[in-house]
Image (cartoon, rainbow, N blue to C red; front, side):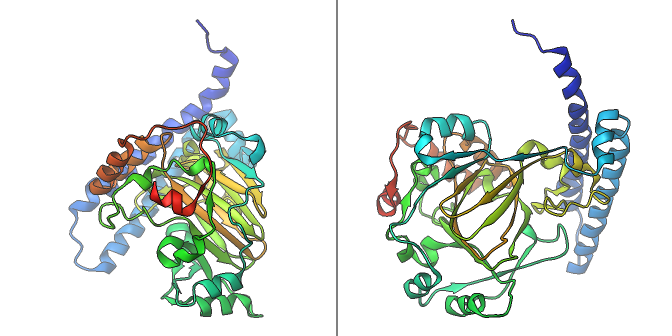
Length: 383
């Protein structure tokens, strides 16, 4: 029987100690947010906001106690005192022609490893802002703008009232810098004509979301993706995780995107507010004074350019900056590698109808094929 190398045991023990201490922090947060909070009766919205600010301050104070405990370990203390990430890892890049579905599934999806797949063309003709403008003349968009307060909003973004797509594109094409950002604009609902020549890459055609009932009440996500992201240089989003423990992919059409992400196991050191699915930590501009435990994270990095596709495993927290004007599409999906976690996540959120709908889709007579082919959008939608 294989035995654990004692040297490996000594190396891993400090991080196990760190995670145990941080799990105590999460357990305390859970008790406060899901047991004590619902039992309180807030007469005014201001009272609730005051309570939430107090709870946030209490949790951050408790994290300081955890830090003092971890500083007793020499190795962990060294990382915290260094005021830099424990490890920064460039995300592996693999050409699409060299990556079979079986390898993608077994090496990346199942193991929860991010990967950049290069040289993927999803459309028969290149996209441009003018193409979008002509194809969707009556469409509306609710642009997002950055929220400078850490942890206050999901992805550090606030949505603005709806405006016409034409007016939004005028803002982007004007000479004045703008922070307006089209974020996760669901193409199937907003402008399905854009997908007329879209071909779904073979890695994502076995999506259980397509097997769910077409009901906005019991599964509102079925026709949410692919979605469009469009913004000028300097736009982006703060650290966040996507809903439902879904896998996430970002496919670059124009420009450049910089990604930083941490895997599920390291979210615990990123000062996550699990009630609001927000983070106080920042992977691009880390504040190790206020958030010293960030130093214990392994941060994965990638720069995406045209025809690059990034796979972000379910449960990974990610953050994005657009150093240039950028256009991309994204998809969230569920397959055999993450369906159990996804159902569990919806149940924990008390979204029982959604969980049951997804469970029925997963139980349909559809086994994972290890040699799927890319599918034109119309055929994919009909599956």
